[in-house]
Image 1: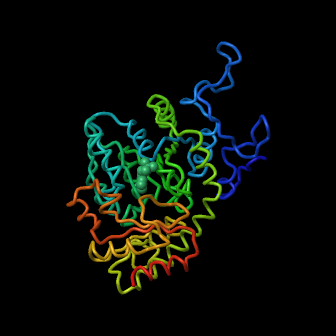
Image 2 (image 1 turned 30 degrees about the vertical axis):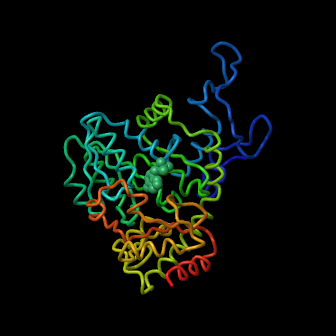
Length: 383
Ligand SMILES: Cc1ncc(COP(=O)(O)O)c(C=O)c1O
């Protein structure tokens, strides 16, 4: 089995990073559930010494995700937040970071509550407005941290343009690509230096693992991330690496369904009299629909919509029966949630208001069930 250099996306998803197991021929990479490796003689080993430093299952996943994202190397961590935390160790005290204002609440919490203690400085701007990025750059700016589409109001940033601005000022661009998945958008192709994911979401895709990945291109970044993965030790375990590796094989199939069902649901919600507003990049009413068409393949599986009040949101959330009321996203099951009190509870009320994360906002992660059943569930919950 040899992956041709010309292999296309779905082929890369199935095969990259993996060879049949050399000892048995097992087509699926085994779960190497071991903490250490026996050495042949002093100083003579098979490339594996201790499992924090090297693990073959994790290495297969890292090779797979580096290829899927179009990077040169990838490093797997115990969660998406651990991956972001490791990437931030590229910085030093006094460095300044520009961040998409509507970034994931846990990312905001890490930056504000943890990393400020280490004298890192953060400015949050609406990165969908390129002028705001330009204005925020100062001599100490070392990183631009983007999320597109944003969680939960699905605003987009023009990746090509944002990377150009950043690189003109020697600023490294990191993109959290969790919401889109690499099937929908590959930021490195638009100029990004590092991509991070919560693999917990679309990459694993089956709601049965928590993990994170950092994909890099530059040799200095690769060298540091490899060092810090081992030095800090927040590695992904072999069982989780295996689960994500299984997930990425079907990523294109799942994403096609997520994309298609979310568009149907978004159109249904946009026409529904009980819904005040729908945020979905696939709708022609989305302010950046044209950018979405250029930058994304399909429009993703996430929708958020405004019901006008907490009471109305509560009524919907408590009455769906097929959809599950739960945090997280990107699994085969449809999940529905209330960002203000769930995923974004750690963001201050005033900030939430500025970002449009109102009490009446509901977020839906469309799964791969039959879309007619999802439509019927929303309709019965509304009525
Ligand atoms: C966009 C985004 N980035 C990062 C994370 C953090 O990932 P994890 O929960 O795997 O630490 C999340 C989690 O919801 C997320 O939605």
